[in-house]
Length: 427
Length: 192
Image 1 (cartoon, rainbow over the protein chains, first blue to last red):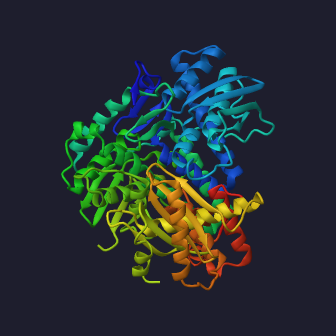
Image 2: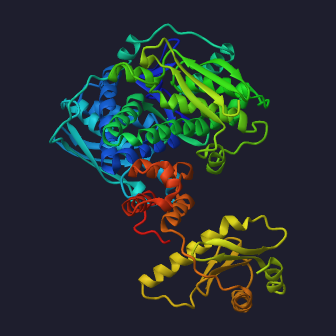
Image 3: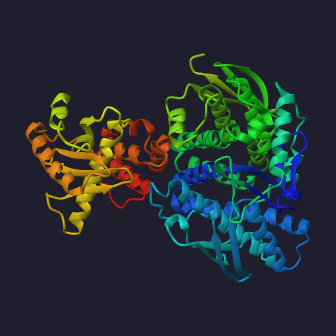
């Protein structure tokens, strides 16, 4: 991981007080690693098909990036089109998404990507195992479209981008074509931190609060100066990390669910299970990578072998990554884990965009809590930890999990807090 | 064939580190012998050797260059591997020390295969349902095996329960299953 002075992200990153929700230039933001990013994109494509999935991912990226870039340029004092484009591309790299060069104006143009987070990390993770036949960088495509819209005053969500070459399909570089859209989608009200703040309820604490808050602060301080390296990537704790727009994750998840409910209602359960699994993927790779790192040992100390500090540490990591003020309400080793939050990055989006939910929609929260229980009990933290794909398979292979998770409360359903209860199957 | 027989077969072969006998067409381990100090797990490797020889055969056939005499030689960092089809029943993989002279390896390979041909039984080709072989192929090669069947279910609309017992799939379901597996693995055809 490299740090650069006055990183593009540092001065614009804000944590909403006491809720541990993060915003970047007024747009809800979180940190996620490439394992999670690739898994979530793949799940959306599985649900909607290659074209439908890519279209939704592009639309979500363009929408969330437009909201973000509009405010970013104002706050950075970028006025002219060239200043705005430069501001957008520098920030893209600083957030760990790679290098994007856009040569386009209001009528369209072209863009080139190097080390783009999705395509590059896909090749790193899967390239030796399978051949990919469709481009991977819908987020970069949407971001480029939004950059042109903001820089040249083009109406929101009216630029289209096609990725015509991608390193994930073994092209030498990623290339994009931009043009005015023939059929712009109907626009919906953006979900900014203004909308998020408007719905926040009083916060609260739980067990081990002093420990959790202290670690979360340390991690926030550590990540404050983090910025993309010379490739525009952030490589740390064994993963590629991105500071990402929460609106992107939320829209692709909830819209994929809504589309599946209409098109193939029998498949909704499987999609929900895979969205929960994205929480396993995140916790195993990112949380696990942080917990096993020398930086963690330096900040918190050696692991004792007791599962409780792993649970507390995981909740601190969740807060530092901007997932919400996750608190420990109950923990009985090998029996129960109850995690409660006054809001999560999923619930605030859902309520703003879709209104009151009929059932707990925070599938990432559910999967992450279950994975925390699994990580706390099934990994021997006192021995050298190697979090490989094989270890993941052994810990999370479907059907054999010793835990079940249930969302009992959700602010998206109008409850005063969101809560997930993880119970040992044999308890 | 009993293991003691395989041990006898390889007894006087220098530089040999292991022998894997893979039953075809299912690519299941039939028998193996490895040096006592090796940490290999034969069950983890046998199916890949079967698939490798089969893919090689199909590739050469596509190039109109296949003959039943063909064998695959792999020179890795610390191993010299020879893979050879023995009749249509087996694939035999011989793992030699990397520094073993190639001429000697070829000579002993021929000698070993002749011996094995004499002791390996004739297997009756018992074709298992294609749907089961498709599922096994997916689980073996999918990049995220834990999620592989769920991904197919989401893509095809076939329930997870049905995919776990794929022999009962209808013909259109099997087509859809196979298409999604090809797409997930990025393959034009499934070599099963």
